Amino acid sequence: MNITATHINLYHVCRRELWLHANGIRMEHTSDVVAEGKMIGDTSYPERAERYTEIEIDGVKIDFYDARNRVVHEVKKSDSVENAHIAQVKYYLYKLRQHGMEDATGIIEYPKMRQRESVELKEEDITAIKGWESDITDIVSGNTCPPVIHSKLCRRCSYYDFCYVEEESD
Ligand code: SF4
Image (cartoon, rainbow, N blue to C red; front, side):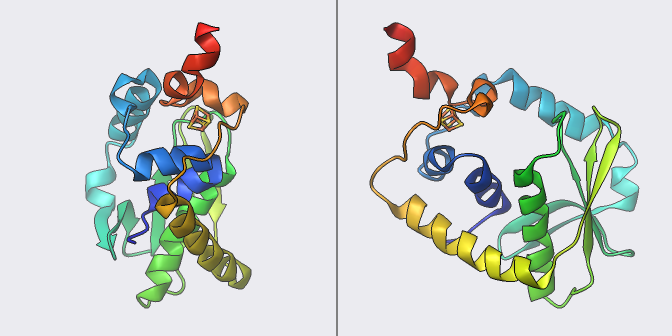
């Protein structure tokens, strides 16, 4: 399968969400959080068009790539640094490395917190990423949707109503 950065991100958030997304069940349009995130991504860095290029490698789209300095920029609406964000950017760096850009680095921008997180791809990350890809392929091709995770993350997930409909109607 063609693994994307979204798959990598969701794999680190919730395997059920990964499965639902990959199997074409979408609810994003109902989520205000997603709409807000899109707005932050579109408006917080108006200089993006001049400094960054959008590139695509093996179907993996990188929205903000500073080709001159070989830096991937990723903007997140979140008010906390999350492992899934770092994993997503490491995956971009992994893809760049596979295509000869071995020294590329990443910066995750958190406009709400006015904070930046630097990301590097280390040797041990490459082994881990191969494991993520294999796990993702197994999960997505499975016939069964993984179980609800009962995490505080669920409250801001676009699948919340879908996952908790039975419990809410009890
Ligand atoms: S609501 Fe929770 S269990 Fe359901 S997909 Fe989202 S994060 Fe996963």
